[in-house]
Image 1 (tube, rainbow, N blue to C red):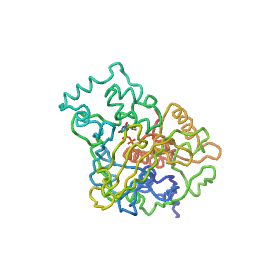
Image 2: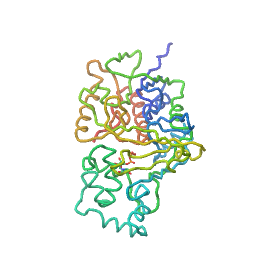
Image 3: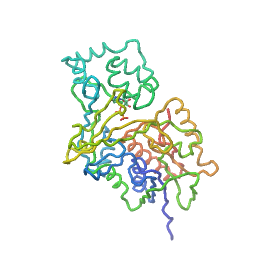
Image 4: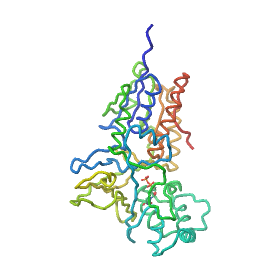
Length: 399
Ligand code: UDP
C-alpha cells in the first residue's frame, strides 16, 4: 500500500507570523512548508545583525523590545532563544530639558519643579486635564483630558505630528492609550510582566524556529500573484503575511502606512548618549528619536558604539511599510481588500489562501500579539485540515 504524499504549504514572509505558523504546521501535522521571503534575510522587520565596525548587535529596522503578559508566548519564544532581561527606560530631550518617559512622578516633579507624592501628583494632573472633554474622540482630546495642554504640547504633540505626519486630532485616541502615565517612579516604558531581548538577536530566534527538517526557506524570492502559477501538485495551500494591498496589486489603491528611515550618527565616542532610546518630541528637531544599540545588550561589552537618528515619513512605492495609519479612508479600503481576500479562492485565477500578521491584516501589532495570533490561527488551521474544511481566510474579525 502506498501512503499519500505529505501536503506542501507555502508561507509568504519570514517575520514572526509566517515563521511561527510554519513551525506549528510541521509540528501539528505531517507536511512540508516552504517559506519565501523577498529580502536577503529572515525575520522581517525584527531582523538583527552584528555591525561590522563595532560588533554591536543592531536592530536593522528599529528597536524591538520583547514584552508580554502572555505566559504561552513567553514560553514559546524561550524554546528558541535565550532572552536576557532588558528594561527600556526612555528619555525625552525637550526644549525644557531632559525628562523620563513615559510620564511618571519624576517627569511630573521635574517638569513642574515640585516634590509631590503620588496622591498629590494625581490630583495635580487631574486639575490640569480638560474637563470639557467627556468622551475623547481623537489622540489630542485624549491627551488634553488626561494631561492638560502643557504636558501634551511638550511630550506628545510634536512627536506625534512627526511620527504620523498628520495632526493628533486625526489620530484615534487608542494610539495614546499605548503609553501609560504613572504616579510613581517606575520609568519602565512597558507595563508587561515579561520583558527582554534575545541574547543572540531576533534573527537567530527566527532561524531556530525555522530549523526543522520539513521547513525550507527561500530568500530573495518575491511573491507576485500576477506571475504566480498556482498548481495543487506544488502547494496545496498558501499563507500570505505580506501587505494585503500588495497581494491584490494595489488594485483598489494603497493602504496608508508610515515608514521610518535611519541616519547613522557619526561619532568617535564609546558612548554617544548613555541610553538605548532618547526621544525628541520638539517639532524643530526633524527626527523622532535616537537609538544607540549597545545599550540593548548590557550583558555585552563594546569599545565602540553605533547609533541612528530615526525619521518618519509617508510610505511611497518601494518603501518598507511600518505603521498602519488606519485613517477613515484606509478603513474603507481595508474593507474592500478584506472582501477581495474572502472571495479570492473562488475568483478566476484564485487559489486557496489565508492572510495572517501585521501587514496582511493591516494592524498596529506588537511582536507578542503577532506570535499569539499565529499560534491560535495555526491551531484553527490544523483543525480545519483534520476536519477537511476550509481554514479561516483571516485570523481576526475587522471591527
Ligand atoms: N508618543 C509621543 N511622544 C513620545 C513617545 C510616544 O508623542 O515620546 C506618541 C506617538 O504618537 C506614538 C504613540 O505615543 O506613536 C505610541 O508610542 P509607542 O512608543 O507605543 O510607539 P511605537 O512603539 O509604535 O513606536
